[in-house]
Length: 75
Figure 1 (spheres, rainbow, N blue to C red):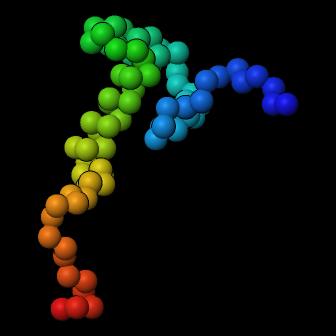
Figure 2 (spheres, one colour):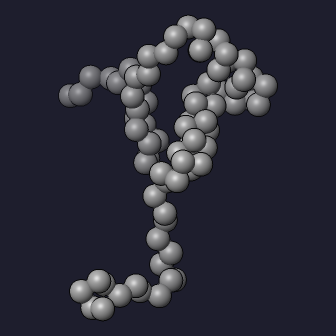
């Protein structure tokens, strides 16, 4: 028999991890999140996603309808 879990399982496709931040930063994020009607977690995820996208670090999703690109060995 498995013991009961304290936390629900993570959403499919999401990772859980602990984030240690300064209390002042957390307060600022709480205010910002409240202004935009988000949770602090959603606000942090939004900010990180936006920063990664702007930096050009977001992996491009593959379009299944796009024509296949030739392999460099085929050129």
